[in-house]
Image (cartoon, rainbow, N blue to C red; front, side):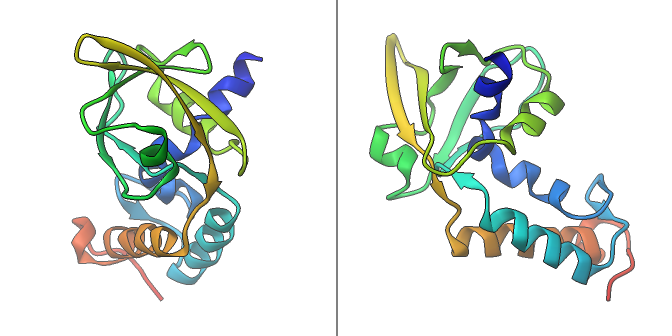
Length: 163
């Protein structure tokens, strides 16, 4: 059950996990060729769930703070707002999670699954239910484009091989 609840986290920070769909990517450099990344990422993102909630970088021992919620997204429709602290997901506490385990588990969330977030907003505590949808094509294109720019060009810091 614990593995299942961790798996429900995929879309909160899908943008951070996006490069993991590509080859062996580390520190924004990608060792796979650009076409391989494009193929893997487009296939994976077409099957990935999404809620339109973007959080600040996850670090062990810190709160999961919402930095943006896409307009019209499942997260927005559920009432999630910028600045909210996502304290729990389906009764699993999110603070102090290992970021790698967090991102790995997120990739297992299924389209159509409902996630209930325990949200701290100021002095209020809320329970907000979000039903995951398919990743919109526009969002997938942004993630793939960002990876291609940062993982396969000089924009990623070093010059890396690309096709």
